[in-house]
Length: 322
Ligand SMILES: NC(=O)c1ccc[n+]([C@@H]2O[C@H](COP(=O)([O-])OP(=O)(O)OC[C@H]3O[C@@H](n4cnc5c(N)ncnc54)[C@H](OP(=O)(O)O)[C@@H]3O)[C@@H](O)[C@H]2O)c1
Image (cartoon, rainbow, N blue to C red; front, side):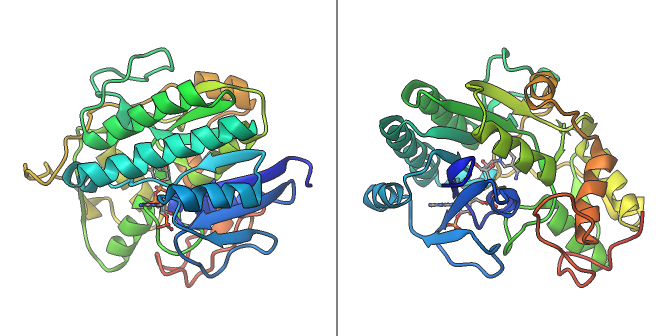
């Protein structure tokens, strides 16, 4: 067995899960699970195609892998979809997490659960781990219920509340706002965003490393994983556009149309990273530094085991120089 043990990553074809798999490195014996096979998984990673929403399939996978730690990223992560498909969203976000927590408890495996800043109602600012969650949308409700299951079932657990994540998928598509914006700008389009929503975005590389560190450490409890900058979405997108060589006016402040299909969004779910800074013994990156980190990797200048993206990246134009 590798030094850090056997790691199972769920949601491995997704945006964050894929980046975790890509960065786990040689320390871990990495097992990735998704409902589909992907191209480009790093050598040395064992890729399992399974539907972990089926409890029997999840149990069989767990018995086959016998993980020492699980980083659980599989989720219905589309806020509006969750609002429209409540029973299915609950089954995926709460049901699968509960099943995994029970398996981890029985096997004494560590569970790192990816939760979200959307557990907060957005009326505060720079939320700490001591602040009371109060979700305003159904997605947030499912993630909070899953948090409570993890804390009550799994003895060795981390509830990692992720801020808005900035970066590019390691494999396939995934839920990357940066990838979607880049594609739009590259086609000459304009991105419309509300300027009322405040976030503390974190780059996906720092985030993946933090999750891997937590999977191998003694910390048990809730921890916030934000970036260092508190910023509204429009300002954030304009700063990113300029950094990528596009124009600031390719980002417009737009009030989303009220629609029964659109779930509520919390206004200010900025989070404090004080605990993370102490636990991870690292400083959190601000927006431009985080973006630089993501782009540096695109030029192959990486200090970890991440994938190398090229100038023909489907998500955008040739990568700009610093
Ligand atoms: N991206 C963000 O900004 C952000 C912010 C806060 C929290 N989070 C949390 O971080 C985690 C990862 O998010 P992400 O952005 O990487 O999302 P993503 O790109 O949409 O990936 C989600 C993954 O979940 C899996 N999944 C979805 N429905 C499933 C189902 N019915 N059964 C089994 N697996 C299913 C998918 O796996 P398949 O390959 O099997 O389809 C996919 O790989 C989620 O828990 C999300 O709530 C994300």
